Length: 158
Image (tube, rainbow, N blue to C red; front, side, top):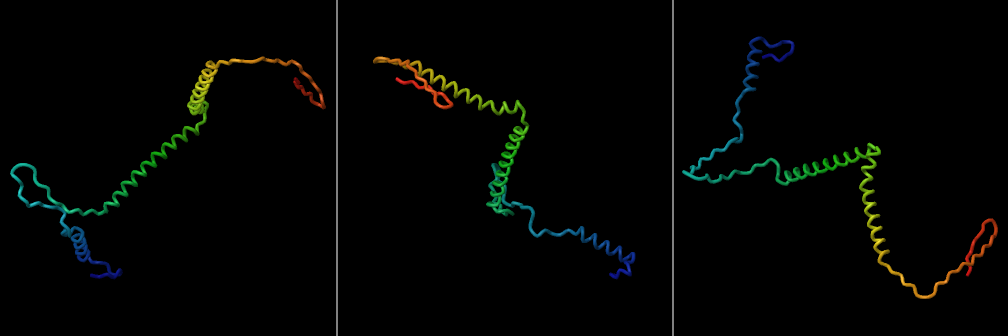
């Protein structure tokens, strides 16, 4: 067999090399580890078969699988939170009169409820008070006015 590029393979050498490459590509190799399990224990005549212990050969440790599941859950939660924030901000970005009224409506409702409660409490207090005056009442009507400088000032003396 010639490997020099100046001298290419002959027809018989090329056929032999092609046959060798095909044999190598389709060669059946025996796997190093068995890929199936056959239980040779006797099967009971009736009822369920007893469980067979199968050794646990996981590729990933259990703690790593738990971390992976937790990270998927956290990622999904953060994605949902981000979508919610995006929706709220999309709604706030389209500022229209209807949008502003829709956002302000809960606050206006709460203010109206607070005003109504305060008014009811005020009226309830006012209706229940009774004033009893004892003693003499003096009404003073003397008014003196003195103008000083640019502005005038009124003063009640009495």
